[in-house]
Image (cartoon, rainbow, N blue to C red; front, side):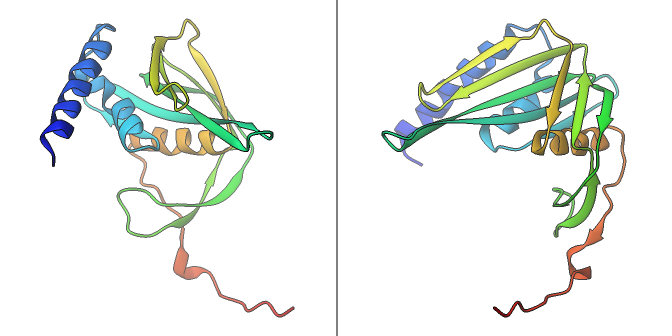
Length: 177
């Protein structure tokens, strides 16, 4: 690693710690959000005193005229999350970090979560900034992929083993046209 890259990473980490320190929460409460920001995806963290999950929503703006676009990723951090509602059923392939292969699982199409506190970080690729704020609302509705990720992480907090039909239970079939 180059010295300038290391300096930039250390500077970024100091800004990150200062930002999250403003919320008066233990550092480890932010682990799921930090992982979502740096690695992507949804994450959960649990101790005897603390439960938190991160869930991501991704939006794309695209200009047909210039044929260019940008994404905005909203990473929601839920402290002590609980379900308000779950609706619908979607069968999907999913892989958990605890397993080597994907499995066919069932997830709700929409999920509403409530939490003691909800903090959102919006990453603007256009502005190269991460905007962080605490929401006044205590509930958030997720649909589609974001709902799937929320349900998956809630299972981790509930210590439910993620089970599904393994990929090798599928059959290949040639399609002739």
